[in-house]
Length: 469
Image 1 (cartoon, helix red, strand yellow):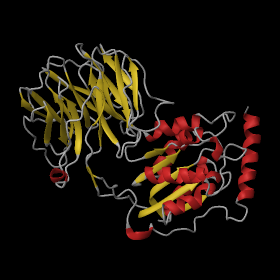
Image 2 (cartoon, rainbow, N blue to C red):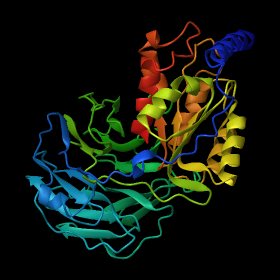
Image 3 (tube, rainbow, N blue to C red):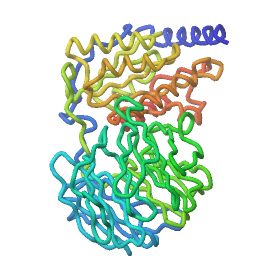
Image 4 (cartoon, rainbow, N blue to C red):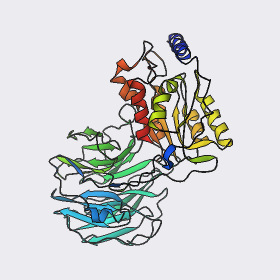
């Protein structure tokens, strides 16, 4: 099979070389900043859609424009236990109640800290806000000992869950560590399971002492009475997982991805997804009876990208690729004016790493980097890490999945490495072109790899990359 794959790719690259015979090997000479003075990914518009209801869940309202103008960002959502409303909590500690969900108070969060979760009491007459520093703020009939003291949670708290009786809480950190508060008993903790951390949610098992941890890569860890029913690692995880919710009996759960895709496991029913959501999904909140859920879209000012580190040029996009990117280059330049495309026939991953290092050392590498490599050979986890080490300090890195015939031995492993790798870096994005390509075989030449320059496939990849930026 390897020999067959080599012959196939050799033919593919010959096609590419012929198609681009008049082009230079690499296009590093294009170094113009993005036209118009606007940095890609630095939007400042207001986003204010209400939570999206599915199943028996109902819409109860969203933030009014007068509140959005204060530039609040909604960071968490919780459902009223009776299903008649929900709470929205901003990163700064403001709480808003809708329907039967009554307002019981807001938190005054210190600068540098932020709210990451809102956890209601079993009767809905109170709630607790959890912050990234490990502080807990109790309102209404909620009670927490030491509520305003920072807790020794490592990796930054990312989520919180309550015991069934509400007398204790568990806080999950990004690295997999769990801290117990009040009467809660620690049922399991895996601090330091991954460098940088990719845990995004902790969910308690209804009526039983245990909890699940959900990872951005799609993995699920079960502790205590929580049973494992499956994960979104591999074929299901096309983008970053952002939230998790449990069914009424704890015999199933839902995972939701940033693109709005909902994945049910165990006895969780599929009530629908929102892949066409106007803004990225932040989390999921389920009805207590398990007959529906809400998806929380990004609400608040559109975030900008962080300033780049040394060696990167702000407001510039650099694309590094192989012959497939040569097919897409004109469409990329039309979609992203000023983008610097450096694509070369037969380029291997390691050559791309070396090129990125060279461009950075010369001070010409864009703060946003697009990587479209992997057509010409497998990519190991170490190779992916090598690329990320070189690009440390970039404002954003976008990796494009490859589309190859099934006969190519590395056709699946490359994309698996990209999916699991990107999930560990919250700034970065996956442009899953392979998923689009599988549904549109007419885009490709006979080799199943390359596309006509400026054709519908090339335009689709360019649009996908632009959206990821």
